[in-house]
Image (cartoon, rainbow, N blue to C red; front, side, top):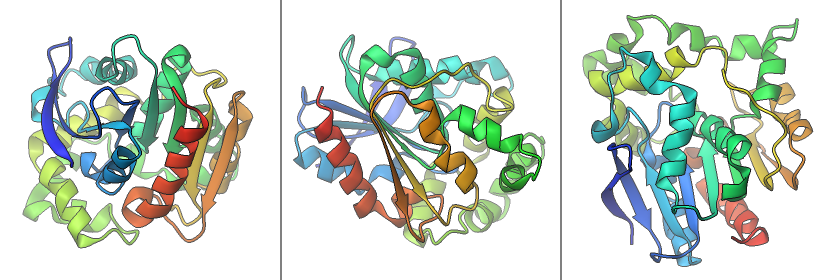
Length: 282
C-alpha cells in the first residue's frame, strides 16, 4: 500500500513523500523531474514494494510546501543542496538505491558522483550524464542546444506566472506534449500548478545555469534508460553517457517513448529498474 507522509530531515525541511514497502527493507529513493512530481512513480512503487524494497518518492525541494525556502534567494536551490536533500532522505549511514528522472536524474548523478559509497545502484531516466549532456550542448551543429532551448526561457521572470495563469493552461499543454495522459497531468499540476511551487521549481534552473556542478566518472553500477522519441534529449547526449561511467553500465533504449518515461512506459521502465536493483543488492 502506498502512503503519503511528511518526511522531515535534519535540515528542518519537510518533504511530502509517497512511501511503500517494508520498513527496514532496502531503500529505493526515487526523484522526479520537471514539470512533474512524486506522482511520476505511482506505477513503480507497488511493484518495487512487493519485491521487498522500501520506496520513498518525495516531492523535491520547492515542490513540497514544507520544503520551499525562498526562491528569490537562489542559493537555496544550489546543486549541492539538492544533492544533500537526497542524502538526508536516505537511511543514515547506510547504502541505498538511487533512481531519478530529468532533474531528479541530474541530482541522482550528483549523489553518485559525490557519495558513491552510499549507493548500491543508480538508475537514471532520460537525463544523460552531465558531462555527456554538456558536450552535446557545445557541439557546433547545435542539435542538442535546440532541444534544450526551453532552459533559457525558464530563466525569464515572466515564465512562472505565464505557466500557471488560466488554470495552468500552458503548463498542461506546452510541457506535456509527449503522450502523457490527462490523469497524470492532473496529478502533476495539483503539485506544481500554483505560483509558489512553479517559482521554486524554476529556481532549480536559475540557480544552476549551464548544468553546473563538478562531475567525474561514475563508479556506481548504473542503468540509463532513454526513449528514442525524447524531444529534449538527443542521441548524442544519451548514447555518450556510457563514456562517463566506469562501474557496471547498461543502456536501455525504449523505442517510440518520449521524455516522460514513467508516464509513458511505466511497466517496462519499472521492470528494468527492478532487474537492476536485484543485480546490485545493498
